[in-house]
Amino acid sequence: MSIYKRIAEAGLTLPQLSVTSAPFKPFKLHENTLIVSGQLPVRDGAPVWTGKVPADVSTDDARNAARLCVMNVLGWVHVATDGQLDRVKHVLRVGGFVATSEGFADAPSIVNAASELLTQLFGEAGEHARIAIGVASLPFNAPVEIEATFVLAP
Picture: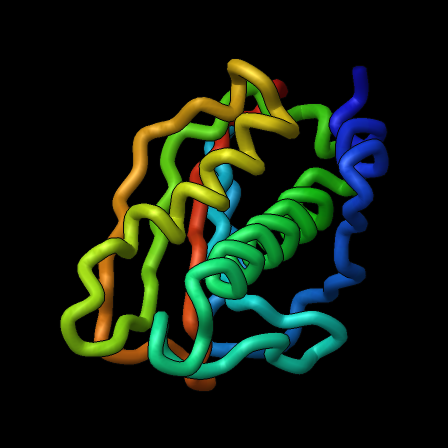
């Protein structure tokens, strides 16, 4: 089954993205390895959630933020592959960063939502190595940021 069909069946949609002139690129493709820069829980150019977990953003909302970050990552994979998201052979690695309130030590449970979504969408090819880190702050006061590395079919 096509990844696009699995995304639709999950009730999800890919964002419409375009590369801007920034001092870095949202992705880097080298041979068959694609690295997607960290993505925030942004929809239509605006953050959906802001603040620290769990003081300002509930753990449930933070998990939803992690899922939205994954959809933004996949949006860049779609752009990088010229609309051929089915070229993804493996999700190699996911990096998850969670802006945490003092004393909150369960960033991995938030990043699990990103891992679970990737495995749901890609099946066995979505299984990956991962890092999940609690941090003091993230860009634009986002509660979560997700980055990922993929192996693509030629």
